[in-house]
Length: 73
Image (cartoon, rainbow, N blue to C red; front, side, top):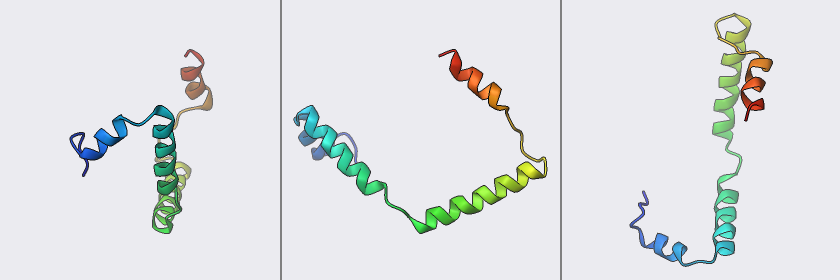
């Protein structure tokens, strides 16, 4: 695991901001790849949650309640 004391952070620190942004984009593009195992996990989780909702075992919040929280920002 990287820590802030890793030498790579010293190299990043001296980069111009535009280069830092390009580096972030590169890293994010490598992380944003489909993973069938994760997709299967989320599909299973969605089925479990949908069934819990249909069975009345899931506490819900109305759309209006959720949106009122963000309208005041």
